[in-house]
Length: 484
Image (cartoon, rainbow, N blue to C red; front, side):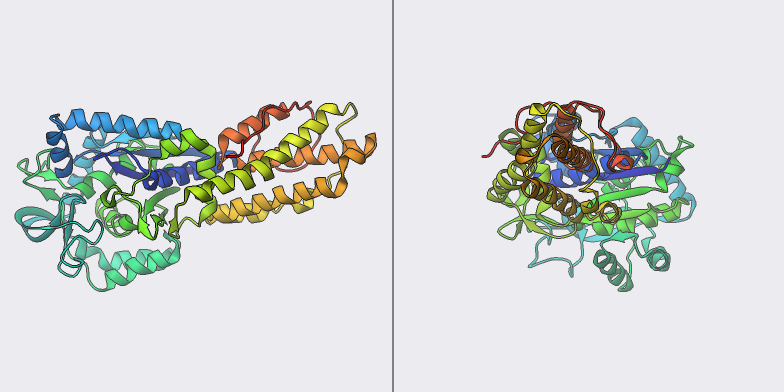
C-alpha cells in the first residue's frame, strides 16, 4: 500500500482563522481524502505556530500569559476545522514538548555540520509578520506583505550559513522540476537564488516566548527553524524509525507568500541536517476581495464558520475549489457561492439524485441492465488531474459526467418506459450516482455519505468506479441541497 503525507502551514495564533487560512486546510483535506479512496496509507498534519514577539504582545494586551493565550486560539482553529469537516490525523502545536525536542535536535545537527555562527544583524524588521527585510524588499518604506511600518533593528544573533547551499538548491530544482508546483513558482525562487543568498538569522535575544537556543540560552530560536521543523516532529522524527517512508511521499501545501521559506530555507536546513528534502511543495494563490488579498491585516477577513452555518461546509468547500485553480488568485464572492448552490449543487447534483430515487421507489422490477453511461466517465482524466494537484480540473470533469447523466435522463425519458427498459435506465442512473458520490467524496464528503446512505451502500473506493451489479434497494431521502 502506497504512502501519502500532506501538510498545511502551521497557522500563527494571533487571531482566529479566516477564509484564506481555511483554504489551505480544505485543499490538504481534499488531497488526503483522494489518496484514501485510492487505497493509500495517508497522514494529514495541520496545526498552529505559537511562539514569537507578536504572541507576547497580543497576550500582554489581553492580560494573559502567552501559554493561556495560545491555548485559547489553538482551540478556535480546531473548532473551525471541525465545522469545515476537516479530517486531519494530527494537530501539532509548536509548544508541544516532542516538537521542542525535535527543534533542539535539528539545531544540534546543523551546528555539528558547522553551519551556525554568531554575528550581528542590522536591518528592517516587521513585527506583525516577524520578518527581517532588506532595503530592496521594502515597498514605500513599509512591509511588502502587510503594508505596515517596519522598525530598524540591530542585535547580536546566531546565523545559519544559507549562502553555502546556493548551488545545492539550484541542483535540487534542476534534478526535480516538479519539486515546486506550479512551475512558475519554482522559476521565481530559482531566479531569486541566482541573485545571491544571504545567511539567515535563526535566533532572537529580545524575544523570551520561544524555544531556548541550546548553544546559548540567552537566545530563543527564531520562527522559521522552529515552525518548519513541525513537518518532521509531526510524524515522530527523530525517534520514529518508520518516518522515512512517509517523508519520501510528503507534500507541503503553502500560500505563495511563504513559498521562499518552504522551497529555499527549509530544504537548506534539511540538507545541512542530512535529511532529504520533502517530495513536493504545492503553492496556492490568494483569495481576494476586489483584487485585494483577504487578510486580517487589511480588515477584510471572512469567517468561514459563519459561511458554513448559513450554507453548509460542503457548499463552501465546493465553491472554493470550483472557483479557481489552486495556484491562481481569485476574488471571493458570496453571490457566486449562492449561484453555485442553486445551480450546480441543487439543480445538477441534488435534482439528479432526488428524481432518480423517486423513480426507483415506484419501480418494482429488477434494477439491472447493460452499461450505457460508462463511456461518458473520463476517469483517467480525473486521476491525471488529481495527480497534478489540479482539483479544479478534476471537479470540472466530474461535473461534466453529472451533466451527461442528467442528459441521459432527459434523452431516455424513463417515465415513459416499460419495465425492462426502465430497469436498464435506472440501473445506469444508480451506478452513475454511486460513482459520482465516490469521486465527489474528497470534495464534499458529507454529501457523498448522504448519497451512499440513500443508495443503501457503504462508501466505495476509486477502484470501484466501474459499472457492476446492484445489490441494494435505494430509498430517497431529503434533497441534498436547498436553494438559497
